[in-house]
Image (cartoon, rainbow, N blue to C red; front, side, top):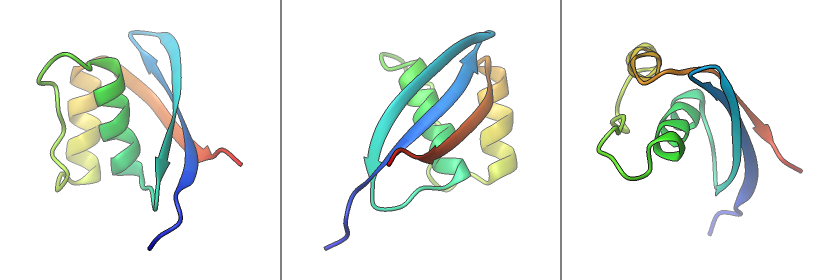
Length: 75
């Protein structure tokens, strides 16, 4: 069983700072972008596919007004 690690994700949504925490066994830039999209639009179908490339995920996030996505371990 993998240990869950807390991650902090920070991003801008239409220029407004947003952040949240997520527990995961591992994380990546694509996962951060996907998570930011789900956080920004929880009630809609604005989802980024898990198999999306980093470039595709960034392009989709930009279309949704999500920019400057960064993440780090929140220990």
